[in-house]
Amino acid sequence: MKGIGTREVIGRCTAILQHAWARLKWIGRILRSIAARTEASKTYPDRAIAILWNGLPRAVRSCKVTQTIGHLIHRRMRRVQQRGGGNYTRFFRNLPLLELLRDLALEMTRGVPVKIAVLGCSTGAELYSAVWMIRTARPEQALQALGIDISRECVEAAASGVYPLQATEVAGVSEASCERLFTRHETTLGVQRWLKEGVIWRVGDACSSDLAARFGLQDIVLANNFLFQMSPERAEVCLRNIARLVAPNGYLCISGVDLDVRTRAVRELGLIPVTARIEDIHTAEEGMLTAWPLLFWGLEPMDRRRQDWPARYATVFRLPGDLPRRLTRRQDGTG
Image (cartoon, rainbow, N blue to C red):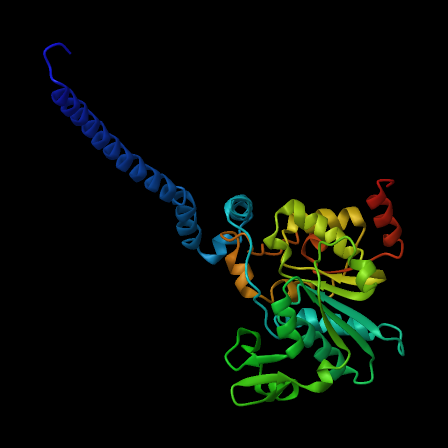
């Protein structure tokens, strides 16, 4: 730069750099705006689907063609929606299911304790409900009840058996049932002592391979409303692991799971669907039915036209006597 002083050169370079920096900031603002719009636009198809589906009359939704479309929508929602959730539970959440489990427990050999376990027990409402159902029907029936959850906080809350008056766990409990379930204090409800007898609570992982070795075989196992929070692959592995906890000819109760996952596992393990009260149990939680197909945890309507409908829509399954051997062979890679 002949004839140009050092100070002028520095000034020109500074001006060029400032101009370039201003242009970069301008481009950055444009890119951030595009990124924000692109991120928001990802939800546009699902919002449009929800508007169209919710606008359909109930009669139209039940048509075979519409149901097929619903399955496609639900498949997408299971793929794109984020899984993982809280610890929602409440007493008598599915009353027809509890009535069936009570009847199955009372059919077992008299004089022998019935072993019942609830995996993903949360704050205890489901296990206390099952114990209440059995003990009110047959007070002399011996029970060994076990609640297992991965959350220590939930296990401690379940063991205490104390719930605030406005807690979701006690929502909808009738006044008559409330008097027989709880002792009322100023702002809380405490589970009565006769219900807590013989009930133990432990921290544990339903996916752990030592589940059966640690807790022993159970006559009835409930694993409800947590497997759908896992990926389908992990949920299927976990379901098979849970099946190892059930004694031969015992019962596995499993809901809140992708039906494709459950149906496949049931078929491969040779579990026998219990069809008593199948429709009452399936339709008991209206919120899960109305959430389908727009939410991954929604429950598809029962379709008796399917050849596999008993295995697909049953919630309770009986384990054949040779299942433990089959599970062991599969685990060892010999079956």
